[in-house]
Each structure stands twice: as C-alpha cells, then as structure tokens.
Length: 186
Image 1 (cartoon, helix red, strand yellow):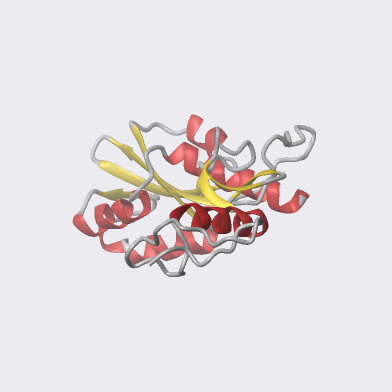
Image 2 (cartoon, helix red, strand yellow):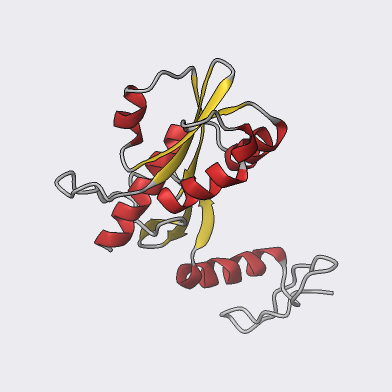
C-alpha cells in the first residue's frame, strides 16, 4: 500500500505505508502530521536543564518555548528573589543513633540545625495534624514525653514509602517550596 497524500503538484505520494500504521500515510507524512499537532499541544520531553521554579526535569516543548510539566513555569524566566518564600509545612523524620524523631516545621533547615541527628530520613507534606497522626500511629514505640521513637519495622516501612523515588529529602522539600512560588506568581 502507498501513501494516500496528494502532493502539491497533484500527483500521489508513492512512498510505502508501514504495516500497522494508524493512517494511510508514509512515515514522512506521519511525522509532518505529528509536528503540526505538536505545535498546538506541545511535546513532553526532558528539559534542557532543571526547572528554576520547582526543579522538575520534565517539560513540554512548544514552538514558542519550554514550559515545566510540573508547575508550568516558563523556562527562561527567573523566579523573583524578592518574593517571600511560601510556608510549606513538613513532618520530618530524622535518625540519631538508634532513635527516630518525628517532628514538624515550616523551616526545617533552621529546626534541624538545632537538633542532634545523624541522618535526615524523609519529609512528609503536612503540619501539626499529620505529625500528631504519626505520633498516634507509632505510639507503641514512642519514648515517653518526647517525639523520639524506637526504630521498628512499621516506622521504617512508612519512611521507605515516603522516600521511594526520592534521592535527597532536601531536594524534595525545595521542589515543594519552589512549586508554591511558581503557583502563586502565575
């Protein structure tokens, strides 16, 4: 079978149609049709560099330029440094020796700088209500009168779920903050 396109000079395209093609078009004309549609709907691809607003690597390419697929920040625009950083409450999980602390903060860098810890295990979006739920959830292993817990399987499983696919909890936190910046300035 040959392509069903009639060329500008009035003759039919004589290129073959690949078996299983969704339309009676040769590969070259399918690609032209794709490019035509992509102008309107964009093409999802890796960004040339991480999004300055949220850190995502995935973007949508339009003829007019790139947009972040995560927060829709226009690539090339620089976030305004004079904007106040938005509040992003997190529940943090830190390990110190054989204990894990579950706490909350809107400024985890400042908070964790004042706490002894060996490792930041994970962040979870949420404030006091989420923190209190976690304290109740893992209460059987809590050291009385503290926010510190003995290491145990259920807590480790919860932390593993939070950190699945996250190489660095700090980058995840920063992405949440920058996404809030991008969303409030759009």
